[in-house]
Length: 45
Image 1: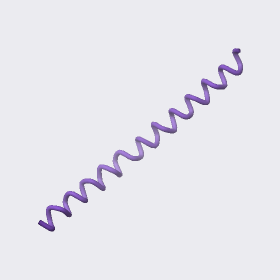
Image 2: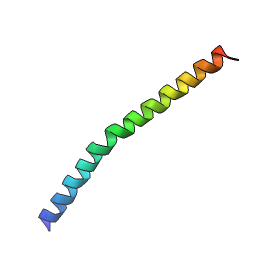
Image 3: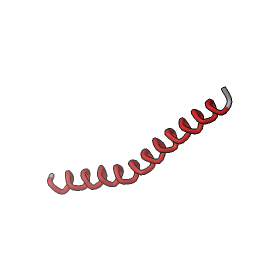
């Protein structure tokens, strides 16, 4: 039982490490796109 839960925890941590950087990058790119769109609107009213 203990070994099984340890494996589950390891898999969960691995998934978190693998997915979280891409999620952060996606959020950053979304923010950058919003900023670019805002600038374009200011330049072209």
